[in-house]
Amino acid sequence: MKLIYTGKTKNVYAVEDGNYLLKFKDDVTGENGVFDPGANTVGLTIEGAGRAGLKLTKHFFEVIKEKGIPTHYIDANIEEATMKVKAATVFGKGLEVICRYRGVGSFLKRYGGYVTEGQPLDAFVEVTLKDDGRQDPPITVDALEMLGILSKAEYEIIKDLTRKIAAIVKEELEKKSIELYDIKFEFGRDNCSGEVLLIDEISGGNMRAYKDGKYIEPLLLERLMLA
Amino acid sequence: MKLIYTGKTKNVYAVEDGNYLLKFKDDVTGENGVFDPGANTVGLTIEGAGRAGLKLTKHFFEVIKEKGIPTHYIDANIEEATMKVKAATVFGKGLEVICRYRGVGSFLKRYGGYVTEGQPLDAFVEVTLKDDGRQDPPITVDALEMLGILSKAEYEIIKDLTRKIAAIVKEELEKKSIELYDIKFEFGRDNCSGEVLLIDEISGGNMRAYKDGKYIEPLLLERLMLA
Image 1 (cartoon, rainbow over the protein chains, first blue to last red):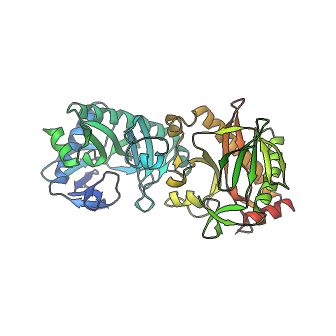
Image 2: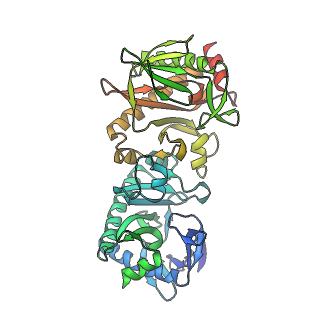
Image 3: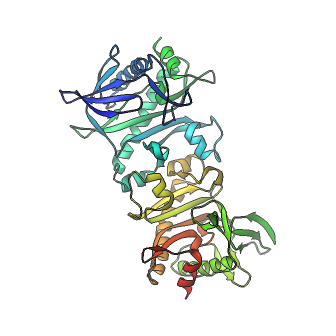
């Protein structure tokens, strides 16, 4: 098993059978000890956060896979906090694809001249570059294509998958009377088939969820969802 | 004559005949006394800068109009540093539409993970919101439409006009062996017909121009172009 990537909240290993193994850490993103899914730094370490994130990820990936969405998910080992996935390669140096149901976070920061906090948005999809040093800049489909990061056809596939997956997660949350405000996904190309796959994780750290108008922290979200 | 808008480098007045009058000031954008077309603050005041900017604007608007591009330009009075234009309304609170032939400025700042300084770009068009407090954030066509700033059809018209106008300016500069790196335009809707028009000005302050690999300051550009 060979370490091929050290992430902020996960490490990625190449396994002998050609697949990858994701090892979930107890680190979560945030600033000054406060969790923030939009942050680019590890803000705090919470014992059990890795396993809790994996449990919710396993749940969502199994629901999503069942609905016929292509994902990298193979199986998960909660005890070891690991997830076996198909080997895939990110677009460029990695993209974040965000689906927004309400105007909060970086969207509000950028477009606060036109939106009010929490204003409903119609499953709005946008792409940002994973680039901590440049504060994950937003990027248009024209720029993605010009810079050779992805083609317009791939962009359309990703936009369509993002809306479908976000709708599935939203529906799952609604079963527990929780409202999804926004969620971010990562996609990659399957190293064997080239197919566009949903990769990475889907846990509390990827989304903003609210219950009775109050923000739900990732660990609480995981407890509420899997209760 | 009624003052209807006070800009950083121009004031706009409503005239009795229904048109607008733009009064060019000697203020130019920049920081700490250094000119920067990408800056959101007035960096310095140069005597004659307003008139010089108007002279070049008059030149470009006349060439552009001749090629059948719809603009707000009616005529100019160099002595008084004023330009008479059709009354038009900006999209939302104003947009900047940029055409890029080389990767410099805010494009390089955002996408420096994928481009090198000065790398050739294929007349790349992008839109930013005019919002000094939010550092003129870039925005996608999907967001422009969702926020009610412009329609997809208007976006396509603006993108097409931007490429055409930038190509005209580029050609004009090439006649003096000057290379256009990037240029920003503003567009509006004609208050009478609703037609999309090129508005504002086209002077040294709107573009980055280089000669023999050296950046040309706006006032020098205006002298070289009109010599």
